[in-house]
Length: 243
Image 1 (tube, rainbow, N blue to C red):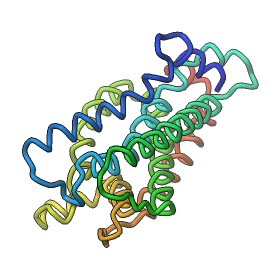
Image 2: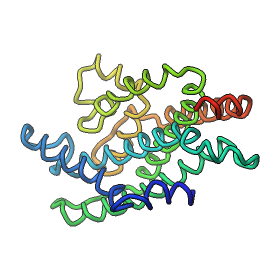
Image 3: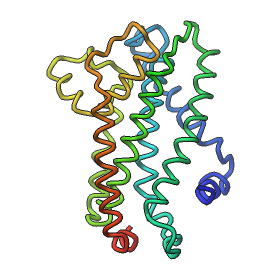
Image 4: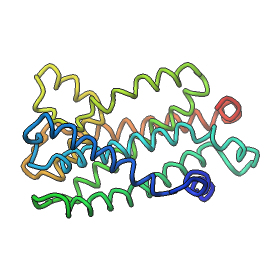
């Protein structure tokens, strides 16, 4: 973790500043862009609050997934030490990224309390559940990706293509209920939709989100983590050489 902190945040100008400004900038762009076309957001009266509620857990998932997927390849030199395993690098990156985003989230919510006119009634428990589901899903997917990237190099390119539309189909800037029934049936197959909807429930008590089943992303994340971890343990040398 110390090595990751040094290489990722200690050698570039601004360091942790960029970890904060990236999600803040994306939320600001979304708010300005959609406020030009819509009179009111799908929930409440504040565009920036609605998009923050959906984008924060999505950021947890995507950043943890991305960082852990590349953990072994980025730390291959450490694999020369017998006591360091590929799983160590995955967990180190996941923990560091989670802690970093917790601080970023706190700063965002603090900023929202000053920027948003309407009072923020945040259900801490629902919000924590949404973040935990995003972390587990991101860690599980990233762990399995480490194995798949090593065994199937072309999958790295396939995943890069497949993961790009996730931003659009994960319910960040709309609610599932606002979509046609046919589209709703497809959207709920995406575990991230359940995560972002749970976060919207945390910020908006009036939002029911009856379709939300957090057991879905939790179960998928745990299954991917156990499967990826088992394969990583059995094929350690191959994964190190091909990551």
